[in-house]
Length: 291
Image (cartoon, rainbow, N blue to C red; front, side, top):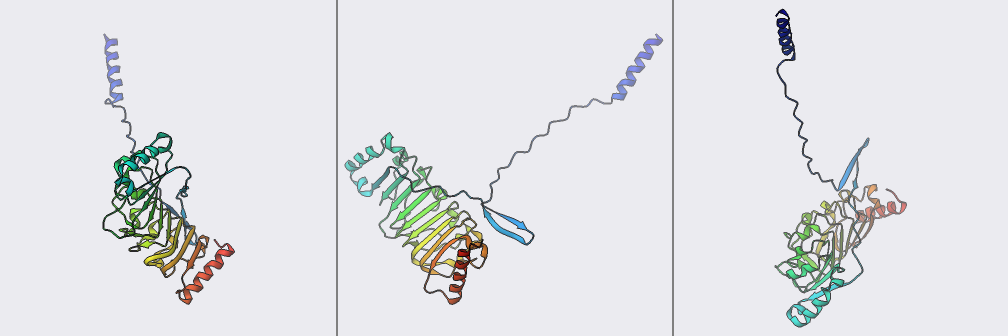
């Protein structure tokens, strides 16, 4: 009996030493990974202060592709017989999937049936040259790969359309582009080529296009373009710039030697002597390869 008592005491002492029961630690819930988008430009800091921003945008992909292109006009829509024959030819499976360029002459409202051209990247619109309050290319959201917009004869853009935000290349010939008051509607724009064309109002925030790689405004028309609103220091991806026609002032940042990497051409006979000297000094630095 004495032995049983000693054994009971030992068990009680052991339980007391272990303390109250504890549950295993809970596994920590991993923090959800937040989606972050890389900036289009990165600014490094040196001992002398902030360095020039570095472009991290991808180079614009080739947009002048060879292969079959489809073309329709308002005449085709108004004459069902002719339209049916052309439609059957273009929508044949051996051709339809190879069409990357679609040209629409006078067709402002794109029929939903045109979504069969699912590989269209380049959309050409030929307008009448008359200004209108109604937007053109209504329904272009049906082209999921659209990234090149080419306009002849002018037109008004619907800046609320989804396809506008996917445009990387804007081409214009003998046109006035209406309704675009801000480039925030085309955040991915990389190339602007305008020949004998212009905006009804020149957007003041052109320097917000951080991925812009080329801008050509040849014989700018329909008002004057204030080039002083272009800040080269903010356009880290810009490598080519051409300006002529109805333009005012010089782009900002020409005095910065690091901007001399831009292939710049500017023709304006009305520049002041100071501006002409500044432009000449820039070209001289460019010829010497100053970076």
